[in-house]
Image (tube, rainbow, N blue to C red):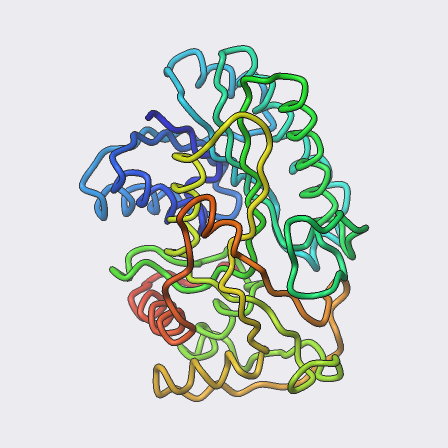
Length: 335
């Protein structure tokens, strides 16, 4: 199939592009490079030894999206493009609501216009709000604790309504948890512009000496050691989950958790990183971060049952691959 991947130069998008190419699909990438780099597109092609088509556009630009659909026969869309930092969304809610929701509407309008009926959406476990763990797909969507989560919940509702109104439209809503790690080659991984918002790239940059120490946001949660617990999933496993969702789409809207089903605290991850790579990570405890919850991990049995997918790589592999990518990376932090 010929697949349009929005945000395909980003962290999860780039790994999914390599998985799609490996599975025999063709890839068109649309990305505004706001939190990614054009060199990643070349690295995707190097890994897969295949060509991809790349458009540097903003997915909220309806005219630019229409041009892509008009020029290419697209069989399906995987939609990653969006702003994604929980803390930043609290400070910049309007940016998040506009970018994340408008992009979803622009894409689905183009799909309807050009008869594209396969759509995979990059959602998030944040749509569960502060629900009881483990999170199960049958849970209702609670009010989330941050605008980022709200944009994901709203987009899910939009896509579900479109599927209900258009019987031929098939959408898979993938609620995934905390992607970490990197491609085994060390060529692509998580490299945000500026200071990282996510835990693992912050840890790897501390390990490399680019940052002085890790800030741990809160140690007074009701968890094993007081620090936040998350379901960390290797980005390579997550990428395979997107391919499985795309290839197993049926009519209607379908929701799947993509996670390992195991919770790991911040300090447990730090310890695993130190053990996996023989590197010490200095850290300090600071105040809780706005919008964060204590625990978040998945019941991923539905994806295994219906898609034949399950996470295979453990936390040690995640830490080793993330560190391999960081050691290979030659760029400098943007100021």
